[in-house]
Each structure stands twice: as C-alpha cells, then as structure tokens.
Length: 359
Image (cartoon, rainbow, N blue to C red; front, side, top):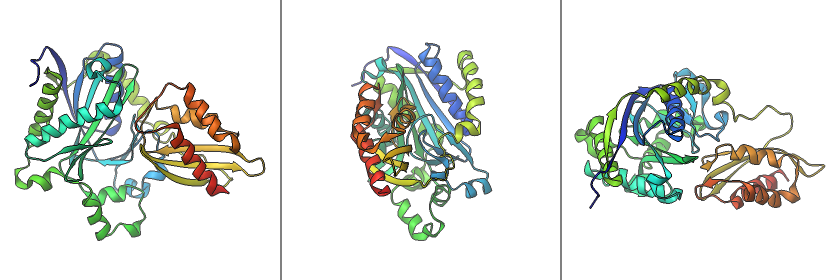
C-alpha cells in the first residue's frame, strides 16, 4: 500500500528532437537541479534517427560511419557511460532527475532495481510480463525491452531508460561496427531473439505512446508517493543552461573527444569482460624500457565522475609495467568515485591482459 502523495514533481514531455538537443537538455536540467532551480522531474523524450555512444567510447571503434553518413543518421555522445545504441522514432526515452534524499540510497545497484522494478510494473499493467534483470535491464522472458543506466552528479541523480515500442534490427546492426559479412539473415534473427518490443508482444493491441507514458508516470508516482505537475517546456534557468550546453555538445570536439590520435607506434588492443561491462584497452608499450607509453580505456561501463577514466589514463602514462598494479590501486584509493559492479582489480586485469598480448 503506497502512501498518500505529500509533494509534487514535474512531468516534462519534450517530444522528438535531435540528439544534441536532448543531451543539452539533460545537462540543463541536471545542473539546474543541482543549483536548486529545477524540481524533481520525470522527462519523456524522443529521437530523430541517431547513433548514440557512451561517454567513454570511441566513435571509430563502435560505429559504422560510412553507413551512418549515407543514411543521414546523427552521431552523438551521451553524458553517461554504457554502450553504443541506435535510437529513432520507434522508441522513446524516459529520465528521472532526483536527489539522494528522494532516493533514500546512494547504492547504484539498489537504485537501479527500485526504478526498473517500478517501470516493469507499469508495463505489466499494459499486459506485458516485464521484470528487472541486473545490472540494468528490463526484460520479458529473458529478452530485453528496456535498457537503463544512471549516475550521480553531486547530490543530483539522473536515471535514464529507453523503451522498445518497435525496432529496426537490421538498421541497428548496420549502424554498429559489425563486419558486413556477419550481417545476414541468421545473425539478424539471432539478434532479434535477444530483444523484444511492445509491437511483438501486443500485436494489434499496442497502446499509443500517450498510454505507455501515462502508465510509467503513474507507477513512478505511486512508488515515490508524489503527484505530477505536467509541462512541455524548460523553465528560464534551464533554458539559459540549455543554450550554452547545446553549443558545446553539438560539435565534433564533443562527439569525437575519445578518438585515439594517429600514432606510428603499434597499438595493442584487447577486450576484457568485467562484471560491470566490457573494458576495451588500447596500449602503446615502450618495449625497451618496459613502460606504458600511452593508454586508452573505453567500454560500456558506468563510472562517476565521467572523467575518472581520463584521469586514470593520464596517471599511468610512462608507468613501469612492474608498477601497474600498485599505481592503479593508489589511484583508486585516493579518488572519490562511484562504479556499478566494477573494482580497481577489473581495470588492472584489463590492462594486464592487453600488456600480455603486447609481449
């Protein structure tokens, strides 16, 4: 039995927009929320066709840019971690902007479970047997219908999810960096077995987007014992930040910031599967001095603050290979960080695995 609502939060529907606008709104609402100028908010959003990479990922490694350019698909970098995804008008996104007090927890795994369980209940009310599956998916019979992720920025928290109303699997596979020979009928069919959509589940009984959004909003209102004040526009404080953020985000400098520089030295690449996601390591080794000359770490993991990985890379430049474990442990010991199902040992293992390959 849920408590009677004692406070109101904002329900904000910003419609279908370009990816840069959507992410500039993310930043505007989150920064304004930190400053006390924005209320707790549930936002619904849609995308024109876009390939979206996680904050720590490399565009060239993750996406098929030839196909993307030929099909007028946008490329954009998210503010949060995670893997590359394709979004268009066949899906929609939902976002929660809250603070630690509203969540009553700082544990990412517990927060993910609470929010995903709530959205799953909303889908159950629409006739879909949806359930949360750690670390951050909502599934139906083992097939993903919603992927989610979140992060703290100061005392404020942003949790995001996307819902598959329908989906063009072949286009998604062509957007991602998958060898052309592997995109065939069987691989597309296999990929379809890992996801599911409202269209497939409900056929001609698929509710319109308004009904789906209403169900999610109602479930969240009941879970947090609140009521909604609906709007479709940002407040003046958010608008000011939005225009500043859009100028930065809608640029090649933002989108391609993690791309590796060209180097004459050989690049050793390796992928390590950690409990918290894939860690892709690229390293240049000074074989004569047995030192890490340069290091890049990308992947579909979640860490806060976002620049933690950049700082780790910088701290390990010119590190003696024999000092790797000691230096990584020292870095994490002094850093204030939050990670979802990741430990310092995972980064040590990922880098060590790449180094072993270089030998």
